Image 1 (cartoon, rainbow, N blue to C red):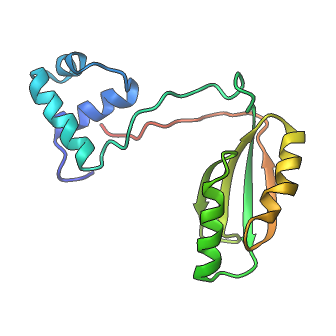
Image 2 (tube, helix red, strand yellow):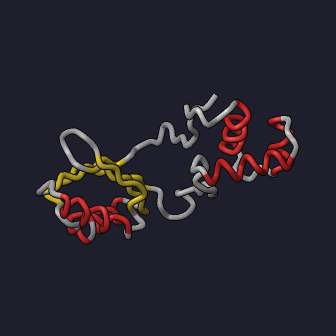
Length: 155
């Protein structure tokens, strides 16, 4: 935990994780401070990078992105140029929700979403295997999403 955060900051962050649409007045009630003091704290937490932003969590099943697939990517070379080209290429693909460089038997782990397996097959052939430096991939289609948490443990 950061030494820059006190118990009130942690309560504010926890409340915003539960409901990012909480009004300033509601936050003030939760942490027993004036709305002005809470607003100043939220602005500081945002300015200092503890709060990255606010967004709605959408239902992928209702929006034609019901298939989640994780993909291990092994690059043909591990040079700064290849890493940079790969990182730049994944940034522009909306099907790639997350991309993580990892230690171990492969270089990157991708989280992708699309409509169905046919859409994934098309994506794999026309996009995934064409990404810069890709030598090998391993695909893991998700059969059941058991847990999908976004909240960080704070208190």
